[in-house]
Image 1: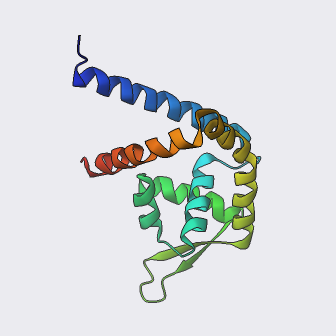
Image 2 (image 1 turned 120 degrees about the horizontal axis):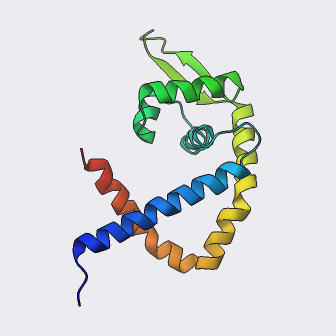
Length: 147
């Protein structure tokens, strides 16, 4: 008996949702005290980019509302993990950059979650994980294009 495409799709998304929930829960518990997953994600993004972004660009990158991003940025600014400066050409716009303290906090967070994520990759096998990455990337890109 052949599986229907709909059944395969439901099974795929069920596994993705459960894996996402488990990963978020486990990683959140390992983050340094007081750091939220959303804050780590923004710090990690800014550290990888190595350049400033506007709050609107960050909100689009994380697929959250501007209000949600503003809340996360306010917490990061209060902790001294980011610098927010006005756009010198357009005072209505702001730019966000990771601070040295933010880079240190991000690095500490990476160290705290590395054993978990490395162990998962080791158990599954680096080659198997590497082989599934293109499929997951394509899935992400296709979902980004869906209205």
